[in-house]
Image (cartoon, rainbow, N blue to C red; front, side):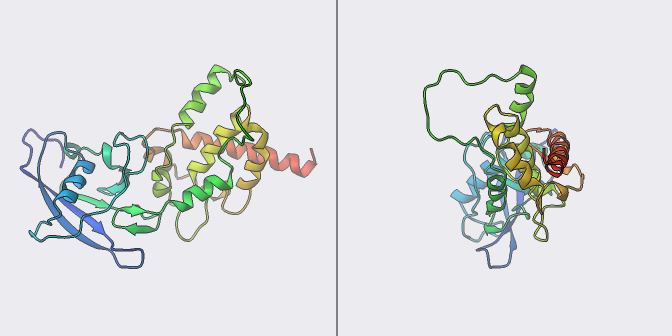
Length: 254
């Protein structure tokens, strides 16, 4: 429902459900009393506590992922009224009724709204989206970064691996092996790190393989969908430049 002066007495939810990865999906309707400040996660919790559908029949509690409830962990990503987003940040007052809730389609469904994000995590492994260490030692302060670089690197570090950018991207689907915007942005982040840059060539090599950066169609859906406002298209453009330079250096044997 759009925001109105008079709130409804009840809120209707239409939830796409699936019993297991092999079964077919189906929809089930639920109706809950309206409460001020209600969000999608609190509604799902209420349905879980009292799993009775709109027909008055007892049913199996709806399954979903969540953790922080503060739009930090990225676990509660789902499609709400056609838009991929975090359920904990989706206020009922700002949603059209009935509220339609579906699992993200880019990832395999485990059950109901629970999805398997293995594809995204494998993409991060492929580009070595981490700083390799061989132990921890007290060596004093680490290398410093210029303030301007630190500021944009901080923006990239806000990624919570929620998968929303992959869901919004038309090039990420079961027919392609495109690595997706999240992994590309993390390559930019770790290539800029004073320690992480030692693995920059390996990351760029990974992005020059099949399913790498050339899979981006520049639809720019990712940057519009990202709940953290990460400049994903800026990162893609920068990494496109880095891979081009890397290609010529490799060709010239530099």
